[in-house]
Length: 425
Image (cartoon, rainbow, N blue to C red; front, side):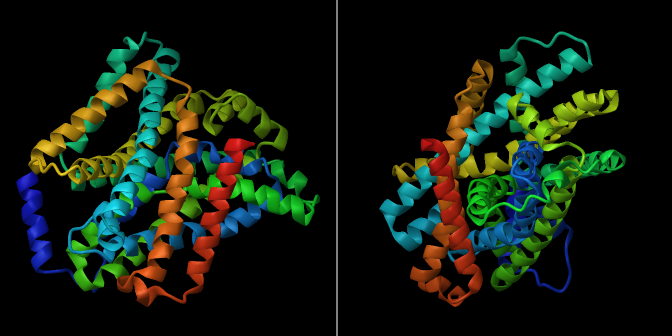
């Protein structure tokens, strides 16, 4: 498999593709980006975004596409600005020096790896609950179940990056169908829901405060920065000088798909449930699927909800593994050690398996705090670092003077300050 992948990569390196037609590989990447971004967090987004009221939700909906597209395009361009085959950790070192490269690599790893641990815990909980409540069978001991599930996902990982992306793109189809099914199923049950707050136009200060605290929720619900580095490297390998143009096209289509799908799902939920019910779901720490299953007492939703959650978590796990493994390999290489590529892959997979298994078995509640602590780091890497590079790095000078740069910087600062405030408040 690896030899085949290497031969394909060599062919791309010598004969870059053109932009004359949209390829199956482009579609695979588009769905892979969608798969990394739209995961378990989407199932909590209607609750978090809907609690602010009607007008803040409308503003967030309008900002969703430019926030996500311009930020991820900036990070993609940053990776593309490096040497051939350089991932994000190499590009940082190339542009900002060894010390900055080591620091960003460390932050990059510790921003993404905790999310991988959270998905390990969530996956184990979801399958265990499904076996017990829907299948009515006693799940195996937690340690055994966690090991089997994580080992199964890492078996996909061992097949190579292209197989990971293809697996994620295939898993996207049932997830899209499930989201559409749920959103359409709720249409007859629309009763106004959040529209009850539409007549209450908040004061400018209250509106700005609500948006300030809600923007990070929207940003990270669509975040797929962990896979952007691998995406950019592959685009440069395939399209050469045309990589920026084609990667922007793929990103645009991926973001249009995810924004349209998720916002339809969000609005369908908040038009069905009242603000008080959304608050109740948040207090019960339930995903919107679990709350809807209880609300309607519908066996179809009760059975489908954990399956949808499993697909959502599994594909997000695979996407975040790419970024976490990339960061870990970068840390090892920056220590001065140069193990063989296959040995480094095996060591990385073994480390991920052991740590994810231990954490999934222990099921600690501290992981939510770790994810929050990683938020400002992700925002810094996704929003601010590429904009700083545009100002300082000659290779990115051609992107200076664009209005989108100011917009991305502003959103990044809003996201970081809101996250820091939520930690200390």
